Image (tube, rainbow, N blue to C red; front, side):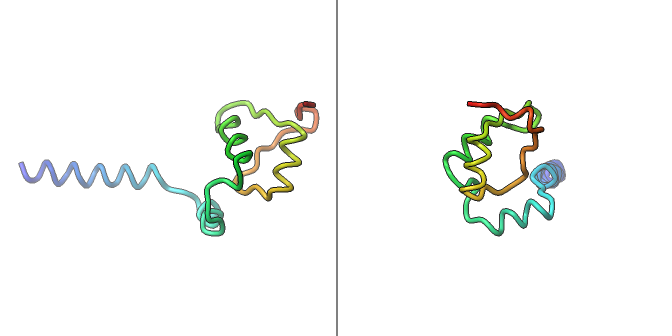
Length: 85
């Protein structure tokens, strides 16, 4: 019985650690910033443009990102994909 619990604990810990890994670049970003998002607008933009979805970017989003110094992985779109709103 003891062996089953120990094995489950080790496997669970390994899965948790492997699933939560970040790249060296991502860790550097985290260490250089005291919060996950630079502002409420940064949070809103990130929730709207999650990984795996088609990004929606306006010129106002681009201007806010530059003025507020948003950090993290950039959402890239072509100029013709930037919405005029």
